[in-house]
Length: 215
Image (tube, rainbow, N blue to C red; front, side, top):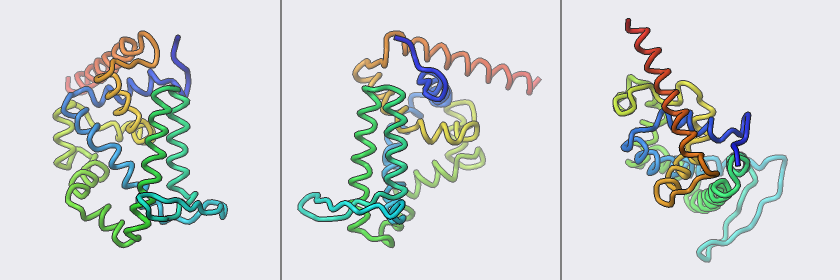
């Protein structure tokens, strides 16, 4: 079974992201942080208004009633979920389920915290402050995290080359990386080999360009 083409070309997307995150330490950092970043983004987006005046959904979790709002946070989670399923039905379905879980639980915590506390959780909690600000604001090479990531990867972060692709692919990339590492999962036979060949070609091309600039 071959890969899809165009916007849903999983090999292309995975190779692009993998070319920037081939260092084991960098991969581990992404595995630990990407989904929590996605979760806290939904936490804040819970307070955006309902889209097109869509009705609220009453929900109960841990015996506590709260409201699910079909707003920008829901739309973001839905876009991510549908995109991942289109990339790969099996791993994408798992990723879509995780998107749904993140949306529900972020809605639950946001409804209990309120906007003020949710905002403080997003910005001033030490864990999120260090990692999220380093990850989002500190993507440029002048920041400490930027230098660290540039040193580990020997190149600038993926965000500088393709912002939308890096943000959109990040949660699915780390999930697929985990499924490959721990369970040997491949969307189809030969996927890992094909992607690695593209990653090597991408890295070699970048190194050639860097060498020409230096010469």
